Image (cartoon, rainbow, N blue to C red; front, side, top):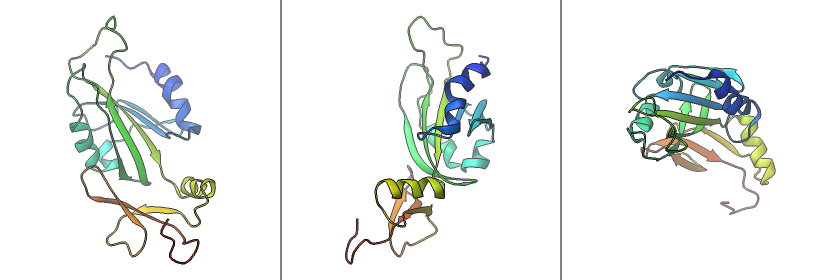
Length: 169
């Protein structure tokens, strides 16, 4: 069906501007390369998803239900054109039995949060983790912790400054 851009903006787009939970939101048709609609930090943003998130976004969405009655969500960390982001996706389902579904194939809601240096620094400050950083995994990490994506591949490495000798936390 048609997208009510005003509703999407009022419901999700505005929140992408200042939300601690997400800064990007997309509505995606199954099998389509670009977002049907989307917002990044309050501004309209409809990227070709594989160009922005890599082909791993396609694999993430392909693992979601293909009907309009089954709820399942998936979340992972993916590299984006701007760095690392946490991604969550789920099919958009009717809110009641009275709602007519316009298609037998669901659309998906994708929420993302960019893990910018400033955002990660604010987490470190809040939880008193000196030198907290999250960067793309580029191989073996001499220190820190590797975080894997949903496919089991290295997605990012988290590092921090030791507070005292021998402290791994």
